[in-house]
Every structure is written in C-alpha cells, then in structure tokens.
Image 1 (cartoon, rainbow, N blue to C red):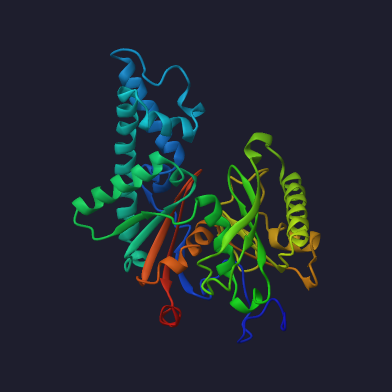
Image 2: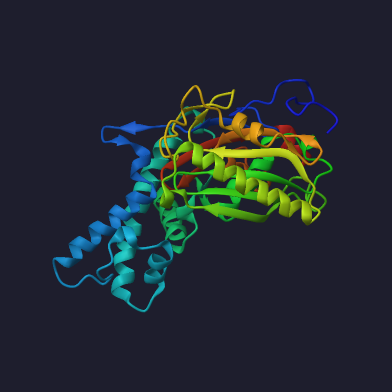
Length: 360
C-alpha cells in the first residue's frame, strides 16, 4: 500500500469514530436528546410505529372486527404491513394509514428538535435510512413527515436514503478512509453490526466508473439475525470472523483482490481507540462497552492479513456510516443529516468539505 495503514498522507493518525473524515466533517452523531417523557428517539423507532398501529387496532375493535385479523402487531412483518397498505381491503389500508399519519407526526416533531440544535443549524437536507425506510410504509411516513414540516414553514428536504439501507450501511464504510488505501483494489470488506442483525459485505468499489464511489455496490453479503439466536459476545465475534473468512475466500476466487481494510459500523459513541463509550446496549450478549473489550483489535487479531497486506480496521457509528454512503449525492448542499429508523433512532450530521465539493 506504499505507507503505514494507520496514517494519513500528512502523517496524522486515522482514528476510530473520527470527526475529520476524507470528504466530510462529522458535526455530531448519536445525539441523545431528551424531553420530560424520556429519549426523543424512543418516539420514532420501529417499535414506536408498532405501538401506533397496535393502538389503532385496539380502538377499531371497540366498534367491530379488526381488519388486520388476529395476528399480533409485533408478529406482522414489514412485507405484510406493506401488503395491507396497498391491498384490496381499504379498511385495513385506512387503519395502517392512521398509524402512518401519527408516526409521521412524531418523526416530524423529533426532527424539528434536532434542527434546533447548534450542530444541525446549517441543515439543508435530511435523509432517512434504517430498516424502516426499506418499506412502502416507511417511504410514505417520510413523505408525510416532510409535508408536515413544510406546513410549519421549515424549508427542509426530507428524502429516503439512495441505497437500500442494508447496502448503505456497508457502502458507507468505503468513505471512512482516504482514497490511497483503496487504490489498486477492486473491493473492500464492510461490516454492519446492529441490534437485530449482523451484516458482512464485500463492497465492489468500481473506482474506474466513479472515483467518488458513486458507483460502488455490494457485490455479495451475508446476514445473520442474531436476535433469533441470542448469542453471547464471544459467540458473536466467532460467528462474525467465520462470515468474514468465507466472504474473503469468495472474493479471492472471483479475482476481486480486496483491499486489506475492514470498515466497521456499530451503534453508539465510539472512542478513538475503538472501544464503545456508550450506546451499545442493544448489541448481542452485552458488555460491549467494557474498557477491556475492543472490537477492531479483536478482528485484527483474528484476521491479521488480507491478501498480501496487514489488515487495517476502522470503526464508526452505524448512522454515520449509513450517512457516508450519501456523500456522492450530497454535493449540492453544504450541511446535511441522517436519521436511521430501526431498533433505535440513529442520527448524524455532516458538513461537506469545500475542497471536496469543488473537486466534484
């Protein structure tokens, strides 16, 4: 690679959870805003939507049969709820619409609070990612929230994230490191650890088609729904290492020559040394915030080399990494944010670097 994998061109160290990234400055992330009822994020995550839908079902039952049947709300998949929204049963669709409207109101209210924060003051656009976005209900909620914000006179654009949220959480990892670390390679490893799933992906960089990584895509990925298995932390790391090794082997066989780097996305606030300061409570097995545990160091120890190079692992917050996937599509604004609706409500805010915008 021509230089130490833990240095920038100017010799400054590449650190985990950094504010200064190659193309953007991370103004803030993992902001835990509260009101008298608790954390604002609890009003706009996937469980909050389920609560809204369940409340509507209970109200409807007072006057007759529940058009959604007997299946508990928590057992309805995103696909099933989407099917109800666009199906022939208009009463069922109207019920789902009622929940969408209420949840969109909560989302708009929460976003309004974010926009009042100093670190979000220059926001021109906000993208919404996370698992909830990957559904018709999610996209309708985003559109409804934007209408509500406009009706309040807020000149803000609210839009779904460009890539599928599963892919965005992997593609964004390529923006964590300077371009020289990827030069000469066709792909890189990316990992997204969430409160429900672990994803390992091989991101095909396609730098010849787009030096700004606008053409990057997930070549292959593997997903493990750890929430079903309830593993401890050690078992999670072992499974993760196995997933990585299998994917690297497939890439080598396909001639993709992955770079000796791993980009890692994880919930919570990330210390410069790679430990998790706070916010890792939804990760499998608990104790991820221990000062005696360091995920990037554990991965490097287990996989010391990829191809001919020494493995370099860099980690950041998962909402930050999802947001980074948007960089090529955000060059017409200076300040922008992301909200990720999933097990929790992730958030991050970015300012584009002027030299990067001019280069594009």
